[in-house]
Length: 243
Image 1 (cartoon, rainbow, N blue to C red):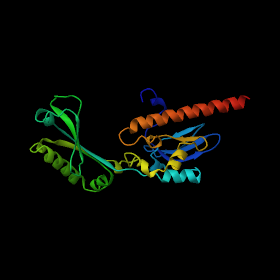
Image 2: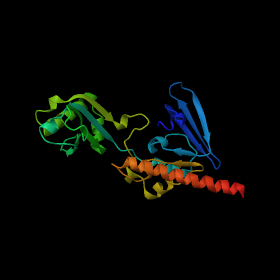
Image 3: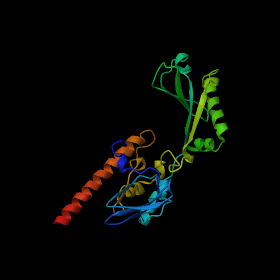
Image 4: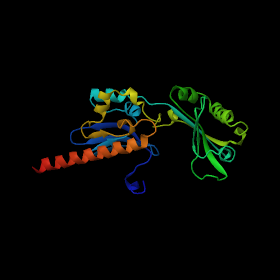
C-alpha cells in the first residue's frame, strides 16, 4: 500500500460495472462525501466478492451472470481474548490448534511472542451451519459460549480471559462472507468466470479454487494471472493497431 497509495481511493463503494470491447466503466460513490463518480479505463479488474458483484448493475452476458449468481458465501466467526499465557505455563502449549466438541469448534493458540506475559487466544473459530447459528445469537451469548469452550478444555482458566473481540463475517459490510463455498460453483461456471467480459476480468481467491486455508495465496495467484493476461491482450492490441 505504501508503494501505490497515491493511486488508491479508500471508502469507494462500487455501484455498477459496465464493460465493452474498447474499455470499462465503474460507477462508485465516495462514502465520506456521498458524491458519485464514474471511472473509465482501458481495462478493469474486479475483485469484489462474487455474491456482492451479483447484486450490482452490470452488462455481463447471461451465462456469466448466472455463474456469478451460483457463488455462495460461506459462514465463519472468530472470538478472540487477551489473557495471561496459561496455555504455555500450565499446559506447555506453544501455538497450534485444539479442536473441541463444542460450537466454538476451535481454540487457536498464538505462535508469536512466546513466554511473554499476555497473549491473544482465539477461542472460537467455526464455519458452515454451526457458524450461521452462532452468528444469530446476541453478542453477549457468543462471548459466553467462547468462554465456556475454554473452560471445558482448560478448567479454572476461563476467568482469566479479558477484552473479547467478536467477528461475524456474515455481518461485515462489503464482505458478508469469509470465502466462497467452491463446491457451489460448477466447473463450467468457474471456467467462464476466469474468462474476460469485454475489457473486464474478475480476480479473487474464488477464481483460483484454492479453498479454505490458502485463500491468500489463491487471491495473489489469481491477480498475477489476470495482470499477465491483460498485458498479453494489450500487447496484441498494440501490434494489431500498428499493423
